[in-house]
Image (cartoon, rainbow, N blue to C red; front, side, top):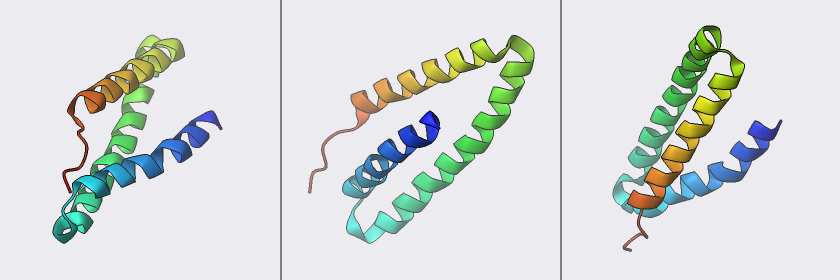
Amino acid sequence: MALGIGTAMVYPALIASVSDHAHPAWRANALGTYRFWRDIGYAAGALLAGLLADAFGLNATVIAAAVLTAASGLLAARWITEPSH
C-alpha cells in the first residue's frame, strides 16, 4: 500500500517535469518516451527483484531497491534544471 501511495504522490510531479521541459511541438513524443521507459523499468525491475530475492533474499532486494531509488533521485537533482520557457 505504501508503494502505491508513494507512486501516486510522485507520478504527477514526474509527468509535469517532463511536460515542462518539452517544447510544445514535441511534448506528446516526450511524454510517450518517458512512459515507455518507465513501464519497461517496472517490468525489468520486477524481474530483477525476483532474481535478487531468489539469490540473496528479500532484505538484500529491498536494500538494492532503496539504493537505486536514492541514486536516481540524486542524479535527477543533479541534472534536472528549471525549464527555460
